[in-house]
Each structure stands twice: as C-alpha cells, then as structure tokens.
Length: 251
Ligand code: OAD
Image 1 (cartoon, rainbow, N blue to C red):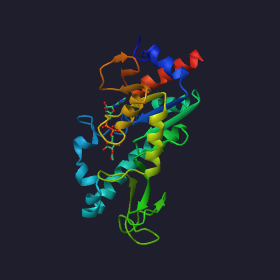
Image 2 (cartoon, protein in one colour):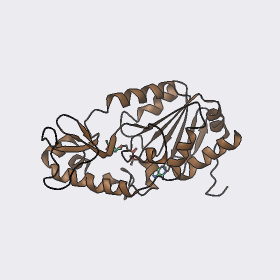
Image 3 (cartoon, protein in one colour):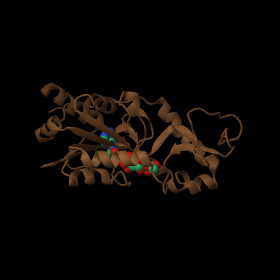
C-alpha cells in the first residue's frame, strides 16, 4: 500500500455505510497541511513558541490589549492566506454520503466552510470575526486605522477576536449542539486533535460510551483496531480522501 493510499479498516467503512448520523470532530491537525500551525506539536506548535497565558486569556487582553490584538492579527493573516486542503474537502464530500452529518470543529480558521461544509459547529469561535469586549456585538469588518484594538462602533469598548480564550465559556448553543450530536451519533471521527482541551476532548468518549463507533485520525496514535474503536495514524489530508473515496466506491 503506497503512502498515497492508506488502508482504511473494513469495519470502519461498514460502520460508516450503515450509520444514520456521522459526526466529525476536528482540531488544528486538519489545518496543518494548509500551513496553519497546530498548538501542541513540538517545535512548530504555537504553544511551543508563545505563552497561552500572555496571549489567549481575558486577563492577557486586559493587561496588554495591543499585544493580544497584534498576535491575533498575525494569525488572521495566516488564515486569510490559507486554502482548504484535501482533508477539509473530503469532509465536505462525506456530508453528502450519509443521512445526517454534523461537523464540530475546535478550529477558528473557517476552512471547513471554505471547503464547502455546511454549518460547521465552531466551538472556539472564528478568528475572522471580532466582537465588542463589553456587549459582545459581533463584527466581520473593522478599521485597523487609529487606536488598536479598535473601539466598538456602538459603545466604544475595545473590540476583541471572536474566539474562546482559556478560562472562558464556550458558545452555549454550539456546545449544546455538539453534546447532542455526540450523544446520538453512530460514528464519530476525531481528526487532528490532541484531545487535551475540554469540553471538546470529552465528545469522542461520550459518543463511544453511548455505543458509537469512534475513529481517531491523527499523526501521534499507534494504529489499533478493535470493535468500535479505530486508531488510524497518518495525515488527515491523506487518510480522509482515502476513507471518503472508499465509501463512494462501495456505494
Ligand atoms: P493540538 O495542537 O493540541 O493538537 C493537534 C493534533 O493534530 C496533534 O495530536 C497532532 O499529532 C495532530 N496532527 C498534526 N498534523 C496533523 C495532520 N496533518 N493530520 C492529522 N493530525 C495531525 O490542537 P487541538 O487539539 O486542536 O484552543 O487544540 C485544541 C485547542 O487547544 C485549540 O482549539 C486551542 C488550543 O489551545 C483555544 O485556543 C481555546
């Protein structure tokens, strides 16, 4: 089997073929092949180079709003230059092959929507939006001229990235939809996430405990197949197209 054609276990394909509801949970690993750094990979991960406490907490924004604004501006530029990769595109195809499909992402880069996925649940927000730090009104355009962070056009409080920081609650509706999908799905694919950040980390466990088949697609797992649990080692941009093509071929 060449590197381009990874083996997808038959048991997983069978579970996907008969599933009524498939959930995909994605993390930074799926966007790595689009050139967006992950958080925890040694050397290249953002948290290997920057301090989350100084950049991704409400306290950091209070202490040094300009530093936080500029850091997110730098990340926003990377995201704006990035394109969906084969992994994102395969998930957009998968949505058409199963009766019900729910895509839950921890990523803030918007690449699932750019790939054509409908209504991904964005658990950690979206870096291309900002919101008022006081009244939470959201904006998709703002001026970088003058004082930074820019003031909210409505109340004058600083605008901040519309993302979830450490110590903050996740968006309630998004989280409820994610719990509900995890609790009722037949198959969950957990893709490119270290599974270290709650509550997203608990979703595959919830699905498994409720009887779903769970497949973990990641670079740092040891391959393993047992009933209802599949660990697939490889790049999402390699594994996902192989998985979706196999499903399409088997009709
Ligand atoms: P992490 O950086 O913690 O984990 C990324 C995972 O993707 C690792 O397990 C890698 O082995 C794997 N990986 C890397 N490249 C891959 C590839 N090409 N294909 C498949 N897997 C690959 O990222 P997340 O789990 O998404 O939250 O992190 C969760 C949250 O922690 C983020 O949403 C962010 C961060 O702090 C906040 O900022 C609130």
